[in-house]
Image 1 (cartoon, rainbow, N blue to C red):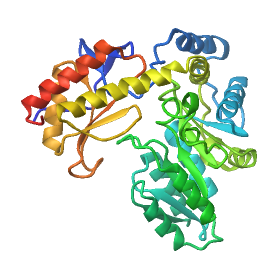
Image 2 (image 1 turned 135 degrees about the vertical axis):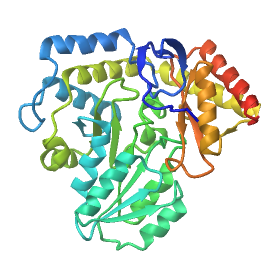
Image 3 (image 1 turned 90 degrees about the horizontal axis):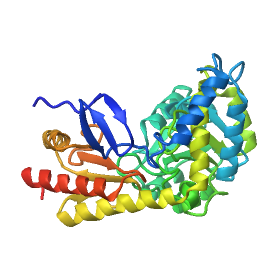
Image 4 (image 1 turned 30 degrees about the vertical axis):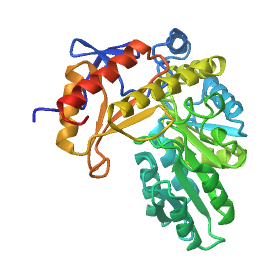
Length: 379
């Protein structure tokens, strides 16, 4: 079909509008939820860190790669999430691989995972299985099926329930109150991936546990700096004893170069802005809700939700590629998700929004969707 929507180089990026192939394109596919990658304070913090510390740490956190910046960000995040301690990893993807196989690896131990969890969790649980741990999966966000799985496992066996907080494709929020209830009932621990939840839901953008007032009931929360925090890296928050164990036994931490000074400083600056300007979270959700409501009213098949992710179901691979091309040619960039990344029949335009989108951007996105949808017979 002559359509290839991947690896499109962005030449300039101001947040809501980017330049690709010499054209200005309205961005409706970024995970830059609070629009902070272009914020002057974030950019200046990164530049100042390079001036002071250089471009890299040239070592792992375990040896020569710990800066006072790393400690400061860990302490600030622990306070932000109301947890005892936080540990940084070099990437968000690496974080799950640093946690899951480190904590769950014996023949009598179990990882219990949602079938729609992010690929980083899948990688982590495969590593745990390779270390002789057991892997059990339950139907997507289906707490009855989770109980079915848990009820068959030995009550005294170590069990770690792992789930996205906000699922990255469809934007659904995990049924956390029931998940926590089941974890207590069946003697399991919990790990929630808040990559798409921090800065989006919860009090002041504090994520899924905060959204449900369960901060003291979730054992571990992991996340990334590549979205709300406008940087690169990952973290895990939890009890000090667990974090200390990970510091000394997690191969992904010990054998990786530590996060760069610029990345850590940028994340710190973004955290400052998130704490000082909570209105950004409200604006983000307001923007996403506007598009969700308008597209549904126009007749599109839009998945229900209340996060920054607004998926528009198209239903087939060829139609998905056609729609992506028409949107792109009309000046709107979205992410096209096809099988097997999503189930057959659920091929989608995965759109996502930022607090820095203004009404003019949102209206343009909505009107372009309507135009293309009519051309393709979707509405």
